[in-house]
Amino acid sequence: MKRFLNMGLCLLSSALLLTACGKHETKTAEAPAQTEYLVGAEATFAPFEYQNEQKEIVGFDVDIMHAIADKGGFKVKFVNTPFEGIFNFLAQGDRDLLASAITITDERKQTVDFSEPYFEANQLIVVPKDSKVTKFDDLKNMKVGVQSATTGDEIVQKMLGKSNPNIKRLESATLVIKELEAGGVEAVVADNGVVKNYIKHNPSEGFRLISDPAFPKEYYGIAIKKGNADLLAKVNKGLAAIKADGTYDRIYAQYFADSAK
Ligand code: ARG
Image (tube, rainbow, N blue to C red; front, side):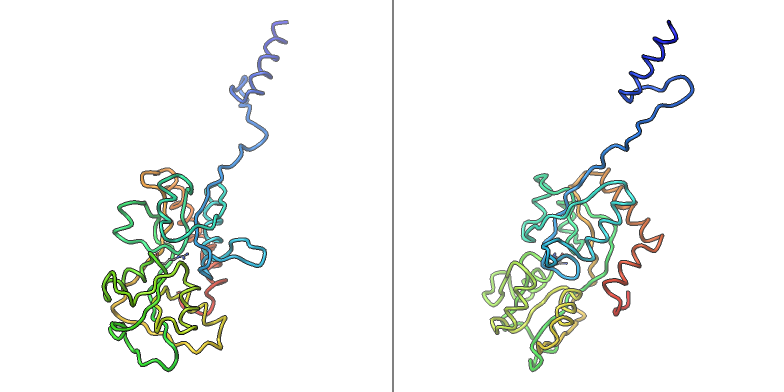
C-alpha cells in the first residue's frame, strides 16, 4: 500500500514537473515554449530588411537574427518600425531588439546597448551621372537628401549645418533615392549596401557613386535595451557561434556574393 502511495505521489509530482523520483530524474516530455522576442526594423532598406511581395520582412538582418536565435534557443519576430525614434521602442519595451542596419555610435551607446559588430559599412554619395560632384565637400551648397536620423543625416548636418534648408530629410532611403530621381535633390548620402543594391536593381537610372575619405568606417550592431545583460549575452553568443560555424558566411554570400567582405 505504501508503495502504491509512493508511486502515486511520484506520478503526481512528475506531472507537476517538480521532483525527481528515486534515481531517475523525471523531465518534462515537451520542451518549454521558446521565448519570442520582437525585433524592430525599418523595412525599406534592402537588402538588409525589406518586405517581399507577401509583405513579410526579409533580408540579410532577418536571416542573421534568425540564425542567432536558433543558436540561443529563442524565437524572433520582425516588426516594421520607423527609423526616426527607433530607439524609443526599446526603452518603452515595445521591441526587445533592433536589427535594422544600425550603425554603432558613441552617442547611441548612451541610450542602448549594442551587440558585437556584425557588418562593416560606410556612407556613399549618390549623384546623377552628369553631376559635377567629385567629393563630399562639393555638396556644401547643394540640395542633399538623407534618411532622417541616420548616420548619413548626421554627417550631412555636420557639414551643411543642422538647420540648413538644403537638407531634405525623408523617412526612408528609398524615398530619398526617388527624390534624387525626381530632381528634388542633387545628391544623396546613404549607406553603401543600400545604394549599391538599389542601383543593381534599377540599372537604367543614371546614377554615379562616390566614396569620400571623410566618411568613417561604420559597424552595424544589434541594439538591446540598456542593461538587459542576459539578452545581450545570448545575442553575442549566437553571433559568435554563427561566425564560427560558417552560417554567417553562407548568409553573407547569399546577399553580397559580388562584393568582397
Ligand atoms: N546605418 C545607418 C544608421 O544607423 C542607417 C540605418 C538605416 N536602417 C534602416 N533599416 N532604415 O544610421
